[in-house]
Amino acid sequence: EAQVTQNPRYLITVTGKKLTVTCSQNMNHEYMSWYRQDPGLGLRQIYYSMNVEVTDKGDVPEGYKVSRKEKRNFPLILESPSPNQTSLYFCASSMTGPQRPLLYEQYFGPGTRLTVT
Amino acid sequence: QQQVKQSPQSLIVQKGGISIINCAYENTAFDYFPWYQQFPGKGPALLIAIRPDVSEKKEGRFTISFNKSAKQFSLHIMDSQPGDSATYFCAAPSPRFSGGYQKVTFGTGTKLQVIP
Image (cartoon, rainbow over all chains, first blue to last red):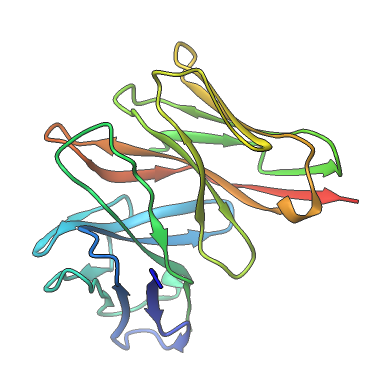
């Protein structure tokens, strides 16, 4: 079954304690991305990756790190979490390529609800 | 800055009615406009998408209308059903000069409730 998996699904942590949220996809997608979802603000892109070892900032990258060492995995790292990073996080993946028009469909994971106290 | 403005924030529609959600964009480089549907406790999923070379695309009860000159696109849900109750997001990926897409900007979402 084609899917994007995230772990953990729920996490409660304290300020300053480093954490990693894992994301994995089994569709051989080049493009992967992290979003946070907050009430009234919608989905905001944190980081994205066009392929292995290629990452770039989205609209809200402060306080986050990512790495893309393998095509299927794209972990999100919070080195020193703060309460304002309490949010619902989604990982997504899609095809990409050199040609446009291109069918662009992002497949989203089930989400990780993070609470930082 | 917000490049995609979505309205309304919430919408209540009677069963059988028409639900209309609007999005306005600023960046004329956007060339692909998807709508995503999100049910509670789930990740968003692609519902329907349009390219700006057509003014309308219909899939079942869902229709996207696109107005390039006004830089607006809308989602219409005909014969709305309680099962359509969800949050809807419009989106606009920023195209790369070399092909494909990079950053993606989403609207703020519309929570739709269809009442029996």
